Length: 543
Image 1 (tube, rainbow, N blue to C red):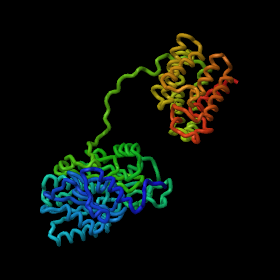
Image 2 (tube, rainbow, N blue to C red):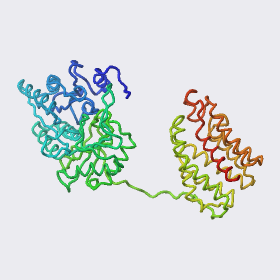
Image 3 (cartoon, helix red, strand yellow):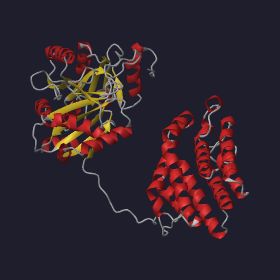
């Protein structure tokens, strides 16, 4: 696996320096031996709130340093607790007469190093209190529970109370209340991959881990890979069984553990919204990477039982950009504007035209994967899906079309493609059929009408024959139709045009204009290939 790194032993140092391009943050000058990130504006007049731990969980912890959250963060090596001296440096640098709260995640290394640093600071005369976050419910109540993304709730509420000038005792008590009212669960499709190390995997493509931690450690259970809704139900079922109050109102952190794409995260939020627990959630932070596990393809959900005091602190503004809270509720709807009817004409029957429509639609559906694979070599891999969607829609409405009135049929196909087909190909074909239908109503010559529609495509799209698009197959086929040549000859012209696109390696239009000659050579344009196959299918029906 490839990563954006320089030297593996400098990953954390360079990442912190990248974070410190934010002018509101500073580091101690003992860096990199001691990695402490602090608020630049800190004047020690209020209680300091400090957290930290191993790196690899970004933006936690340093990404949450700022007004209304952490005063300082202590960063260890990847998945390794910072040293006692590093934690002590943070305490000494940030703590004034009001004292300091250390927020510790419940891992042995963190408990030992943060705890010993706290003892040393107290021996030096500093007032230090600690709280330990143990929000992971996966392992049950009989073991020491791990600290997961629910830790960020403690950062936010303790940081806000410190900002308001509360005492160390008050802040520590409320922080502990937050911990007691927080529960988290994680689920992942993959383990994390350490930067600069060989790729490893303990899971097959058909396995998922439920109840795993943030350091790549195994989950409590391996379950079968399934649809997102089912996996979410499994995770939230575990969470619901460990809620501090089954009837209460909650805030939620929806955390990306590193490499889940944004569209998948939104889909997972939708999956969560279908669970029983969703009706009890009033606020959400995310979906976003908040406490990641380098690049793990997984998510975690943390919930915090609200009361008036907690809710007020949560809703207060916080400076770190990584913290964004929003209301959570059911998807809302408003009335759609009334669009023109897609099927505006009375259906009419022409068995030959019906067969042509059904055979063409079936062909476009059948070749979806093949054309997608071809498009993946020279585009974004979805051309087959675009044509297949158009084919499915045509098959669905075939009996409702004005099959025996060519002009109206062309206009209707244009409307169907405008409404149903995505991508540039769908829009351009919609323009083609719409313009052809308008022309045919004035001059009932199919070949000339299609050429007229094609000219509109060229006007709007900017491409012409020779630019490695579907025009290279459409134009010679339509010219052949206009000359009243047989459909077999028309199909031959379309095929010749599609084959010609294999030789075009330099163009200014379409996705091909972004690609090198080596990539394009001997690969036909996917749109032109589809057009050629459609004409060949039509020709086969007329043998």
